[in-house]
Length: 66
Image (cartoon, rainbow, N blue to C red; front, side):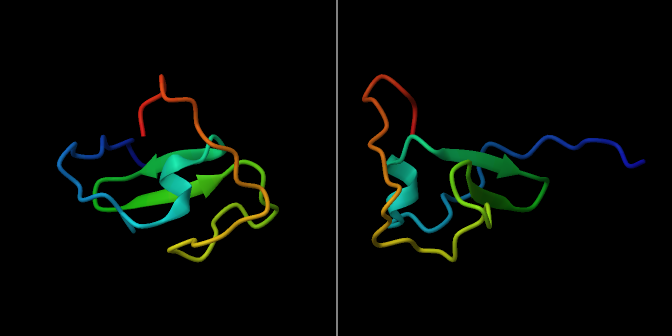
């Protein structure tokens, strides 16, 4: 099994206009060279980006990081 590699903190924000960045269901999945937006509510897990509208959208509380 391969070693886990930490993602660099300077990766550019993927699809900065995506609704996912403000959603409570988004989880970041980072690797050494990529950053994916995973939805814990969608059956397919990774929505085609950028998401402009979503029936499952739930605004993330302001106290949580984007």
